[in-house]
Length: 281
Image 1 (cartoon, rainbow, N blue to C red):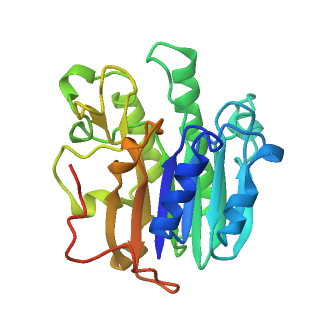
Image 2 (image 1 turned 60 degrees about the vertical axis):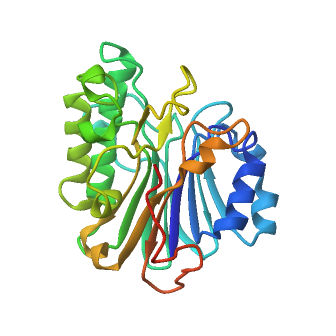
């Protein structure tokens, strides 16, 4: 079963790239971030023509998440569900459309677009930390101990220094600060596994390259797009791939898709070959 995540940086701008990639890879589930379109303007038809069901949580010009699935989608949740007043926070963290979840083929799929945070000393950074705390509350409420869970998306956090091309340069800065990493660990709480690090322990593997300063051409990237799986799925995980070639498209997203292959029902093995080099640099 192929499950992918991709920050597409506008689903309408990148529509032909996304559908071409789907035709080539044939994922069972594709989670998108930064769709940047209101729900009533989301381009549903091209995905339905390919045999996919789509659920969306979007807004005009900013943010937005979607789950595209060949399999039946059930129990859809858009945004956080807990009581804000109980957490003593008045700001509605569902105003920005950054979370959507559903049950698909026995899995709980949770797709997130974590705020970037802008800079450490900004209000946006405080918002990011509080948003991550809400994500932790959400998982506490929504995920049972025996659930099979995939928590995917653009987390805008490099978990470790090996996930940054020049860690000394960015030490303590946005997407690499101790506070962000601690907030992410509070989300994971030891109950999730970083799929990519099961197979690859070294540095040099990126999912995002800035559009500026020839970052892609110079391979100056970050690994900030992740697929975390619950520990009870670890025995079913066959592989994890960062598809960096999509960053070479004409007018590409600044992110590359990340895929995992799980050995469960509705298995789709066509895309992966056990003899292939799964980690292109």
